Image (tube, rainbow, N blue to C red; front, side, top):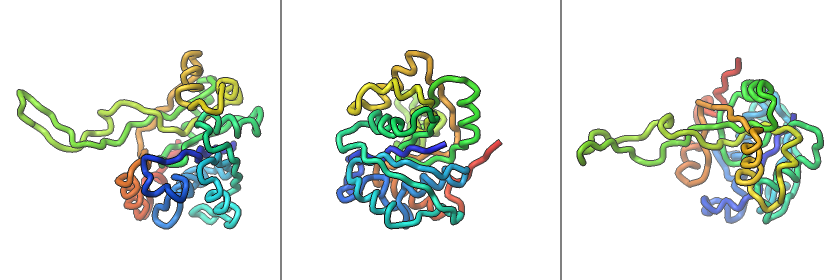
Length: 242
């Protein structure tokens, strides 16, 4: 099964890092975040990747073409890039690659977030329900100081637990070939377009991931990932399979 990595956005929320490179090429502990992402998949047996590029596509293309890229176990990764256009939205980036892979089930994810998702459990869940698509639901990281207040008195101040935050789209999709037909336009976001239509047709299921998940939308989050990357085992590689 091939892994599509959506890597063409402008990365405006972390523009300090993306003026000269796309966000998936932002360096975390000496390597682009996209390498750390591919490592999650490769160490679980998925070594074929298609990177859907757009903004600063030449940076990713040069990195792929000029290196034999290995995972942390020294296994070579099979990587292709597809330039899906500067103005293309996430829906078009996925459909552009799915067009090249007719009748194939694929995994798709964003190029700027890391998680210790068990792909064995994710795929087993997907196969159990028989629908067209599965999205991984995650708890958003707590970003602000949380206050508990009673009669205007602050009785607790501290970080809010992730478990209090509800569920959001964490990427890590499993998509059947039929999903291609739900993507109507290259300029339509996958999230507000195809996923909405799939949900309306009861063809979208959520796999609940309770473990580590961290996007990289801000410099603060980049620094957090850099700190985690220096652990003997980064938390996104602490994966438990059944």
